[in-house]
Image 1 (cartoon, rainbow, N blue to C red):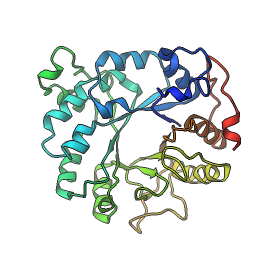
Image 2 (image 1 turned 90 degrees about the vertical axis):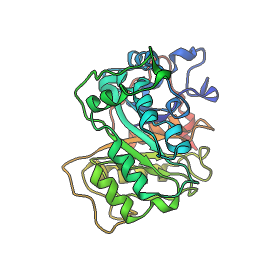
Image 3 (image 1 turned 90 degrees about the horizontal axis):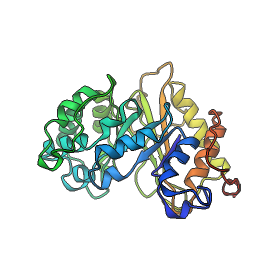
Image 4 (image 1 turned 45 degrees about the horizontal axis):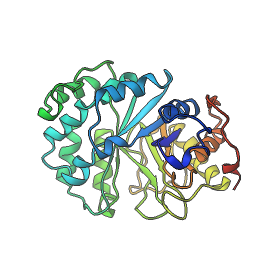
Amino acid sequence: MGISGWRYPPWRGVFYPEGLVQRRELAFAASCFGSVEINGTFYGLQEPDRFRRWYDETPPDFRFAVKGSRFITHMKKLADIAVPLANFFASGPLALGEKLGPILWQLGPHTPLDLDRLAAFCERLPRTHDEAARLAKRHDQRLRGRACTRALVDQRLRHALEPRHPSFFTPPVVRLLRRHGIALVFADTAELFPYAEDVTADFVYLRLHGTGKIYVGGYHDAALDGWAHRLRAWMAGGEPLDARRILDRQARRRAARDAYVYFDNDVKVRAPFDALRLARKLGLPERPCAGGDVPKTKGAR
């Protein structure tokens, strides 16, 4: 359970305590939540030292989701990406070691499905830290002298796909993602983009962008109760009875299933408070929110 990004000026003095210095914001967020999404990786290549600093600022049980480069997804549109993909993995994600959670690949709303291109992309994605390290070694000169190309842990890599064009919400895409064990992101976007709940991996990835207006609207208690109900079903290895699936066929039932949940309704400072409230509804262990008291008023509306 966590938030998408953590560096938002309007959060200061509302979620972040008054006087908390900016460089301590990640540590504060990591004391409240078990995970965050790193958004900066979407906009440009980072540096390994930055990932190492993020590792050092978070607790041992913390996990980062890392958003894939928009150069790969939005500009190259998944074509001719051998070097960009190597550059992305060489830029530092492997420095997170065991704290590296899923890689999120978001596809733009104006890019229709090319199934062959998507299949080739799925084939190319590394499935372990070792595979990612081997891929990272193929980086170009832009990463020379500042690349991280060594696997620190022997661990699987998970990938999640968040498409936004309606043409992706079809049975062939679901079957493709299941074949590769890539999670279809369940993205609640105030009905701006299509939505489906086909389970395609051994984990689910839920992004909650807000109600009424994307990135702005908060979640009332009834809505959070609904998400808690759905998450309990997914985490128990099954699916909600009213799951909104593309395929009639359910995913294979499991004894349990991991879930990654991120709130992205950040504009009105709703995301952190909604995340805390949903965590409580799910009975997740209370985290201390070290560094100051979290205000309680935002969840009351």
